[in-house]
Length: 201
Image (cartoon, rainbow, N blue to C red; front, side):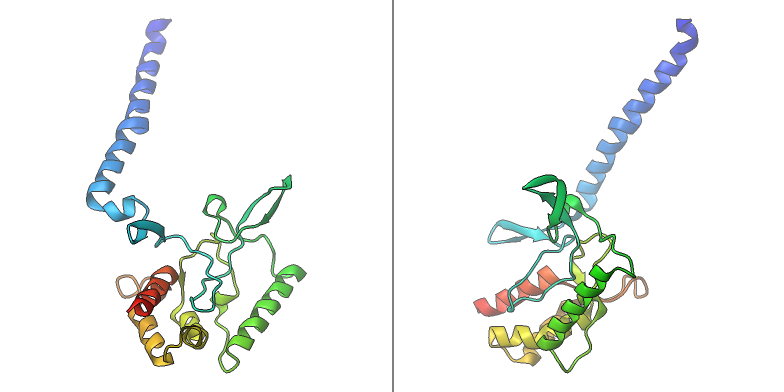
């Protein structure tokens, strides 16, 4: 009997060693050698301290910073473990909202967000990505239109000319990948750090 099951046991152990140890370790080593920044999470440092990742959005609330997309991520309710509470940009619990297009709660939230943004910039159309959440809830980027929409607020809060802030948005706008994949985008954290560098001068 042992002779009959021995090939299966050997194959199981060999495949476990290959797919469970050798392959993951080889891929980790190759990624670390070829793409060291990305393999470590595309972390962004300031003054030697990690302040975020280029791949994970953050909740900026201050008027002197550009704001990202709304985030629908949740966290356990500290008062009731059977419930959840809103926790924007919670990377430990990535996910979007389960509210459908006919949801009254979604319609109310969208109206509230649009009204708030219209008060901020009454002469411009509200970009859709400033009021809609993404599937991950962690998007680090916004459209160039969403960044330009926020320029008057940010410029006023920082006492900077609109033109200077618009130039900063343009300088931090990434084009389509290979010229045709995806959409132009602005990394919110990188843009806000560039703003801070101007203020420090």
